[in-house]
Length: 235
Length: 235
DNA sequence: GTCCGTTCTTGCGCTATCGCAAACTGCCGG
DNA sequence: CCGGCAGTTTGCGATAGCGCAAGAACGGAC
Image (cartoon, rainbow over all chains, first blue to last red; front, top):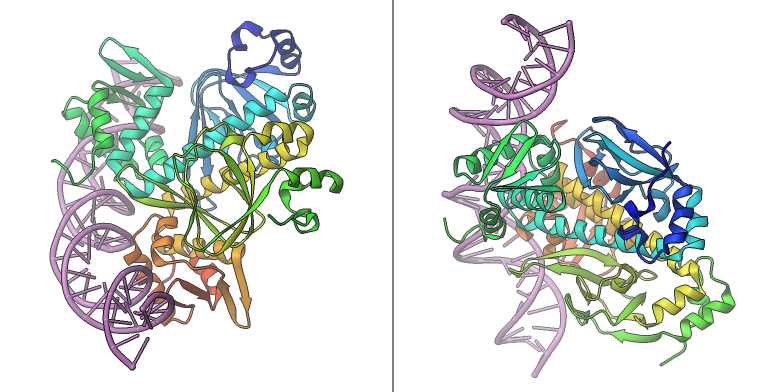
């Protein structure tokens, strides 16, 4: 296992307020693992033995109902932590993590966490911020699901993905990892059919360009307008 | 301001792992305030100057969209904390807190938090657990909104309320604070009309008994069945 | 006891979205 | 180069739930 260069991760929010010389000590407790595309990193319900920091690639966190339906909790971008079950006192992972692209991940054993936060309280504070931010995002999502139509929700979802993991193109922004209509449906609480119809519509208006697990926002600004439009104003 | 009896709050999750003698010191930093029914405790967007522990009564946390629609984020029961904006690094309250019943609240100034968690790390850990639990509940709610029909969601919402704040009766469980059809609609992502129809239906089947801002679950067990029923099985 | 405001109920038409079914397409593996 | 599969598109009916509107019931204020 290759040693991780501290300078590559020092700027991450997780390590804000941690002295560079301490960072080395923290990283020594972690190992770096590569997950190929479509491989599972952990399964919902499994005992939480580790927590993770994504270095490269993209990870999808999804929750499954007893009856088999799935929702996408979030997509993890490089630099973000995931699988924080132990930090919030959960013994088991509440969701499944899947590498949607070839990914490299730093892994700490759950057991290291108490020691780490004791030595480096900033880690605990930073994690608290992260969890708090996710809580707020969750609430925003609930608000959207309660008050907006499907088309607006899809628009918001794409804009967030573009913002988080968009690759800037000459003309437009491309979502930088494979994502299907089904995935977007599971992010917005709808069906892949409806998502497909919406994207088809947008495509014929030139707002997006898309294909198999691939989406490019050609007119991000117009999509913002869509996302914010009050459904019963205008056309 | 009356002094708060430590024995009344010592068992709360917030203070788990705090020594009784330390508790006194923590409580000295708080003041106790009474809010009459229907009064606002803080407003969404206001600067977060305090954090709160509910001693008596019930508080509704709700989020409002730019266009005025509201959703209920949660109901706070006695013994729970709320208004934790500062703990998660937010400068402003992300929701509005309203006393739905005459309520008594312990209030700490935001500025006391850093000092408190430094002296009593258990507070930080407990708060982390709380926030984590809320995050998971949020995800569960998103899952329900994505996969279940309105009737099931309403059933789940009522069961949770009954569980959290239910008063046991000879026959059934009463939700122990004033709650309108509209409130339930805002918890489940539907309209008050639909909630009203659903409750009417249940009432005629003897599952519930309800009136103005008042709901009694007469057959909690049957409501559990409703909540879990797969929509396309059975009648 | 009466008035008034709020909450609740209910009928009815509407439509956004689902669900199914069938066909299409780009792509990987051999 | 040729399947075959996963992902996508699209048509078409079905419907859950919405939105409006009117009225009824409850409970507090005076």
